[in-house]
Image 1 (cartoon, rainbow, N blue to C red):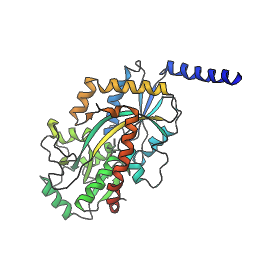
Image 2: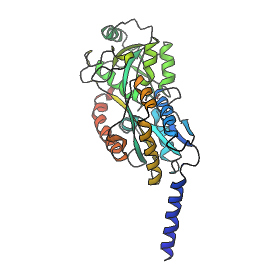
Image 3: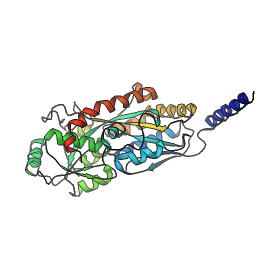
Image 4: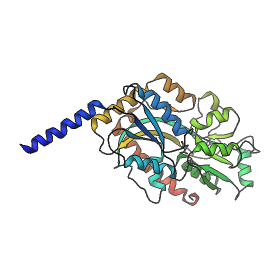
Length: 323
Ligand code: ASP
């Protein structure tokens, strides 16, 4: 009888908690620099999720470093109360394949909340690069072997993964220059301190349009329809056989977050993904908002597991280019 009373008390506490959620600001941890592509998705999404979460404040907390493992680890270890959640991208699948020691377990340490979007990447170069097309770009790379600096957001990041694939495809070893996100890397690329980078269209589209950087290829199998990028050839068209990488973003909560809280966040995500303003902003930057079953937490989890398996042989094939 005593046990039953204790159980009832515990249950009523969980339900009362879920009933009042959210009653204080929610923090979305972005594990990359402010002003970069992941940060951009998070800020637009937070705006769209605010209303379905009862107009609560959503704070973006940029927790930087180590290819997103520091910020991701912070959420893995946070209180499972729905007030600290993670927004991360394909790094959730590349980190387990690339980091020597993972500080958390992607499969066991999180509750999956649903996926947000798919985003192509582009290979871009400093504006002073003396090349007008992919062939001339490749000639420049061949002529500058041993001197090429490739920017990225740290081991395990999307730009690191894509940069590895690119080095392997052109068979040229480049010096990896890690930043805490591709926003600061972009500043150095524009300034010519680094030579090239592979980055999401959510960060590169406006810079390509403004001619602040040169673009030499898109990483999708088909050309993009985004007006600013529609004339950019695919890397496959330019002769890099089988080159294809698309970034995706998802939301995660610490393991053990109550089911009702998870359901509320997932509902708010679903509302945001149908918000015409959010969709428009994403599309203008080449991103495609998720409309399929990956918005369901179980499908999100399955997808990430499949991506970990998918990238394992690709990364192994490029291992000689890993710093
Ligand atoms: N684009 C970065 C990456 O390469 C992440 C960022 O800065 O948002 O993973």
